[in-house]
Length: 388
Image (cartoon, rainbow, N blue to C red):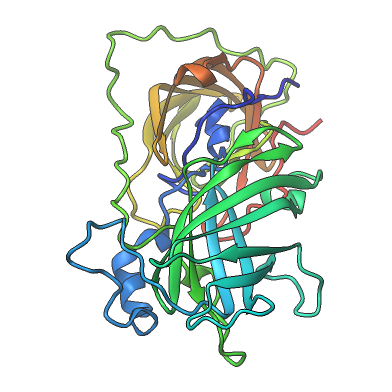
């Protein structure tokens, strides 16, 4: 099996849903992009739920949206949610203590201890670092290295990253910003353009859940999600279909919801909804692809219709598939050759990623598998190739 390897030093961005491209970057799309529309991306609702943390909302009308910051005392416990490039969602618990000898009011120098958000309370922090907050509430947290379990990218290998959080303080209860740095193992992945936000989490009787915390500043501009449908350069040539003759296949009713996982260094995961229309010999499928973070009724990233033969074999053709990952727009032409197994459908991809140029590559031979799935359930450990 061939795996997609991301070029070293490639560039940035994240989120258009969600943490999840139909194929190659798509993995880098979801890299799990699953990439990124998401229920927690409803900032209006979030601002309502967290108004008490923000006082007057933390927005100074004399400053542009996305630039406001104020000096505040950050000492205490925080829950941070971040969306790293490729749709990797990482929750962290951060505790700020005054640095030794710090007497300023509010304190300007802190020692910060960082854990994964769900690690046991008595566990050792992953990182202990220091930071200085400037007169306007801007500060930087450097986690070097930040060691994370491989499960955050659906792998067995542990993940090691250099993460730099460039933060601004919106109020005594909220700080947020953009990250930089890179994942160093088990693959090279840039983090520039990744986003995060943190809320104060002081009440031991009612701890915040990661779902209560957005992963970007509430006053940042909404990302623009490109139209995934219309080719901009004339007719796109359909590639030859992968040869799946060695994969047993039998017709089945595939109506329902499926978790699609593709075979990349960082698996792409998408939610596919299918409606089967039986025929005299096989039938057809109507389908829609969404981020695994999407809610029922959210707009699809792509829709398709395809025929299914008597043996349950079919192809999904996605010409000019476009996905926004933060500030990065990914464009690809993707063909999914599929076989229907006892409890899934699976196969191989063909086609290519066309842009950005740093990610351009042939997708031939990349594998995938889709299993029955209830939206909102865990996506961990999902298979990404046909059963042997």
